[in-house]
Image 1: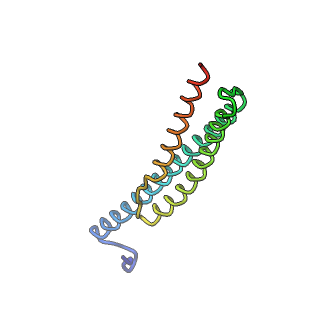
Image 2 (image 1 turned 30 degrees about the vertical axis):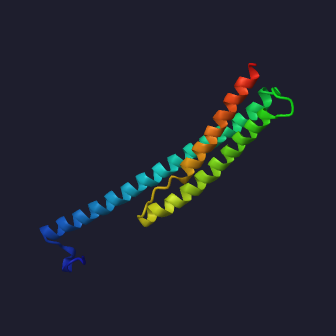
Image 3 (image 1 turned 90 degrees about the horizontal axis):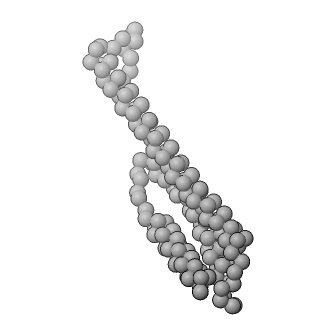
Amino acid sequence: MLPKAGGKYSQSERRILNQKEHEQRTELESRARTHLANERTFLAWLRTGIALISLGLAVTQFLQHQVVPGLHLTRGIAILMVITGILMTVDGARRYVHNSKQIEAGVFQVTTRTIKIVTGLVTLLGLMAIAFILLLHN
């Protein structure tokens, strides 16, 4: 809406302008909150990735047992942890960039592929850890 001569608006025009300004401010604040939530989610993926990489390194340092001759279960668990940590970090960054673009475009679509993959890898790690514990205590 263009200002009238002298820059004065009627009361109803000011209400409309105030309403539009309020809507624009609200949408900007909402988008900012969504971007910050996206960033926090990425940081959670990053922390989890770092934790798995660190845990994989700790496994190789503190669990030097070869419970079954010829089977390097400790090494397998450690390598799987490090690989899972790397994949989580890389995919977290990919998701962050992808989600940021969707947020800006106003078209966010939820995906579950990464959740399924990570769940599968962590489940595999857990099963390998159970096997290791059972073999270690026999």
